[in-house]
Image 1 (cartoon, rainbow, N blue to C red):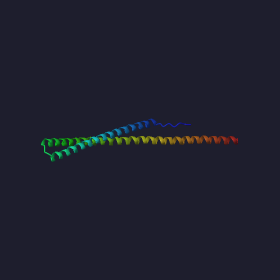
Image 2: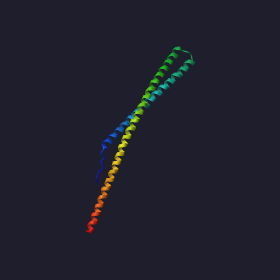
Image 3: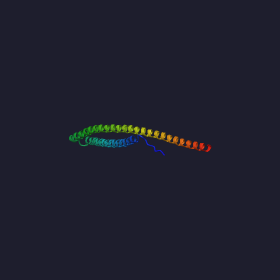
Image 4: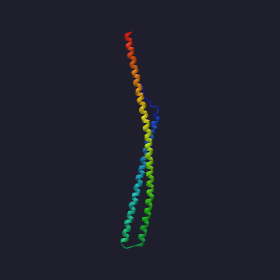
Length: 148
């Protein structure tokens, strides 16, 4: 019996490895995005804490120094939040790039798998044809052998 050998199997194997690497890169980019979003959320929470403190400072006995320090803290938190938003945005872009790369690699792998499936179908048809020819020869030989 003939054995099916896909000529492009090594390329298909490489495509599968590239796909697994792209999945890992996508997962890492996603994890980084989640980490940066958590950091942003922490900064926002901290800013709201400073804002509540500002309300408390104004409503109680007024201390100009405490109010100024609190306002500076709020301003610092606002700039940190802006910077963190930029980091989150960059992480989102990295996730999107990793997703696009993963999609591209998956399409390439699927293309080679389809080629492999087609080649296997052709192989099966060739084997069936050869078996059919062998049966026809055997029947023809048997028929002609009996009539001779």
